[in-house]
Amino acid sequence: MLDDAESQRYSRQTLLFGRDGQERLKKARVFVAGAGGLGSVISFYMAAAGFGKIRIVDCDSVELSNLNRQILHSHADVGRTKARSAYETLTGINPEIEVEAMVETISEDNIGELLRGFHLIMDAMDNFSVRYLLNRAALKRNVPLFHGAISGYQGQATTIIPGRTACLSCLFPRAPPPSTFPALGSTCGVIGSIQVTEAVKYVTGVGELLENRLLLWDGLHVAFDEVAYERNASCKECSDVSRTDRTQ
Image 1 (cartoon, rainbow, N blue to C red):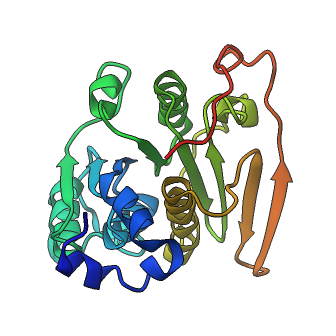
Image 2 (cartoon, rainbow, N blue to C red):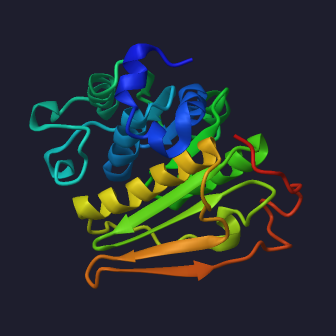
């Protein structure tokens, strides 16, 4: 149940999905992979929205070159771990929620323990090797994966529901070559906000999700586009995953 302070804090968004929807958010446990550009936006707005528990994992420290886009961190945080900086920022935004910030490198060895007990996975990574790992973990645990990626003025987002949609490997059978890509803070803001909106809709049970649809953002021309994609019947990752119904 929401207490008086929570009722006041969330009063404007409960106009959208009611107290029941807010209570569902309060019960939701979210895993955020990365405290960089996308992870900053995602965790910032999830904390403000009242997701009950956020676990954010990142192995890096704050660098000056991060600050054009990684809004969890300030100039005073340069040299500190991103996890510690994230914890202080998120608890300052909303002391009503539980925040765990961990200095870890996400790997095959620890992904199971990192995700234990969590209901949603937010992809805020900048490399496909970890994205594929998150995809496999989501399929194994039957939890949704909210994918986002950016490069310069462009970005993309989609929502993967195990058993009901194509998985990330269906959409991207091969990873793009690794590179240092340009990053604009406002692009992170657009894509991260879309990922959070998808997670809110999933938990509260309202609206239409980005299922089997890849949303593309072109900031240079201020345009959204959409690409439909299908499940690959021979996908090595999800071909044996049974269809599931939407759950909150």
